Length: 257
Image (cartoon, rainbow, N blue to C red; front, side, top):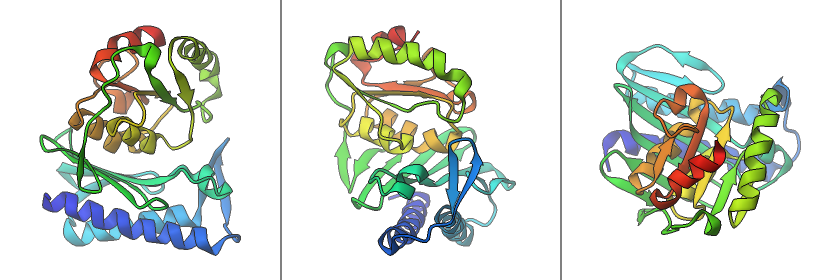
């Protein structure tokens, strides 16, 4: 395992322990609303602090982009993109679908990614050119070749209600043209599920880089395709993503358009 990926794994597991302890503790969560339908807890902050502390000990000069603390300047070569608890609303309600997501970007290219589901103890990892793994087992995207046979993941644009009409049209089309649509509420974990073949495709609009970065790398390393809703690069900046197995990617994009 690459040394940077090893640090990312260590940081993700440390954050996962914090999340699991809080989940076992039950009530008493202090919940604050950042904006409509967007919540943060002390667990988010504690998880993020643990990740950044672990990263800083190993790589004090690297830049950090984290959901709660924002952009911290550092080396132009490396940036750590961190979501300390993707699926906070799920976590608050005890709905068992949330994760830690950490990606490393080197000179504008994603190079390493970790997504850790602390509840199921599932660790997804990927390094550029070295494949994608689930708990040390190599994974590939599914062999789905027809959109009509595909199980598709999605996320509601709950933070940006202005996108509801656009999204509703996309959802209507995919409900008619796929085998089924699922919305679990943690985009990073959904992308990991595409990488390991549990989902055949995924799309969402209104996302942030920390929602997408690690999962996008995993999908490409697992043999899948990723882009914005037109199939182009730059999805991290555009805040939208479409991912699928190679055989259905074109028809998936066509349906979304």
